[in-house]
Image (cartoon, rainbow, N blue to C red; front, side):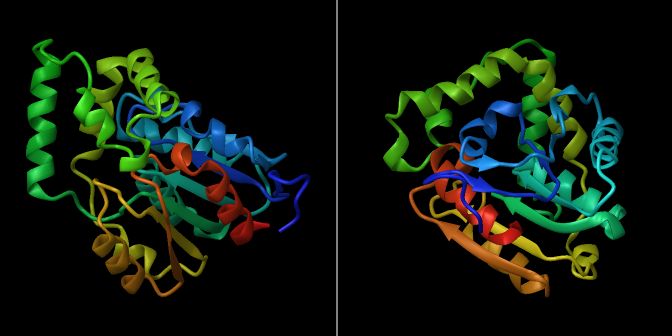
Length: 242
């Protein structure tokens, strides 16, 4: 795990990053500051209008590199990264899923998404509530305005149309775990110790289902792990890839 200085880790292999819902590059900015990755690409899922476009953008970024690629997906982006890995197995060096599950969505979440889509269509959706925003973070970060503002600014800049496109594109998704279990590349599962959107039991079940997986939980992190524990996550990724 080479280090270029006290807090920067060198990764000399190609890595492609996939963002979560209503995220752009800013979700990874703090994380990237601790990493030097000359062969780095980002999949702008916020540009996609539907699932097919998400897949096209992913394939396009994968094609940047001739050698096997490490895929790193956060939240929603983890599902897209996993699907990309399954469909391009000979091109994949590893798959890292950050705060992400790859199974079907429960009926309750699909119903919640449909209600949200209806609000957006009727122009009744404005923004995430203060309570909802804090729920993305570990309790110890609820008063960290710098962290909260990153998410608020992304939401404001990307807007309700992007949110609607993303939740509509990914709500009818299939369970990828059976296909992932047959893949030979390493799968790294990493989550925060207080993630209100991804339970420890869900991650453990994934780990038990995937023979080539390992599982790590990072302390003092909620769902926004790349923001909350950027240095720790960077060190973790470098230890798996470098």
